[in-house]
Image 1 (tube, rainbow, N blue to C red):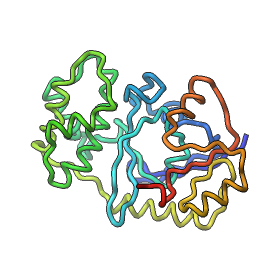
Image 2: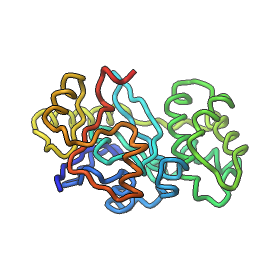
Image 3: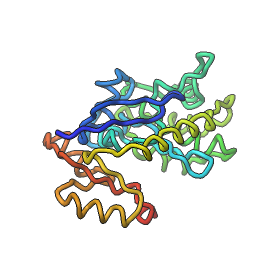
Length: 251
């Protein structure tokens, strides 16, 4: 099977993974390759949210954060992005991030299996709203946590925690450092030709040309279908063509 290298930023440093197959998921990379067991495997179908992590991409001179299901996210799709898991939120002095502390103060964890996923959705909310001086409303909290399921039916204290994050001492991400690392990865990518295992073109013309060159490559976007083919039916693909970075389609 074709393989390809991946680079992403985690904990302020560039992580390089060698010879990664195109159908390896981000959850597999985290749990099996990097030993990050805080990110849980629940349904393995992208439904329950136990495997939630946060990804960030550069938007101008800022980062935009997004909570995603790592179980159906192909690992290669995070090349050139920044990644946070529930293990990455501890503050430099060993304290809890407001997303974690708010859950503790509101007694918002019961069996605990879903908690890391909720923490990460809260962290994404914190970065996109609270750190920008915005207030988290009940409606916003419900919307942004809609991808996380709690089988213990503990939603009320979790929603309370979401609204109280902004009342805790702020914790800042060093976005300048992260952005500099992302630029380093982008410069390296320009000087190196990637293999044909995983392609993620950035323009429509590039996508069409790549499709013409590799007509048998499996198209992916959100992987709500292909992710299940891989996880549940154990299907493998030698080549993946990812359309999610095409500028003309990102609207």
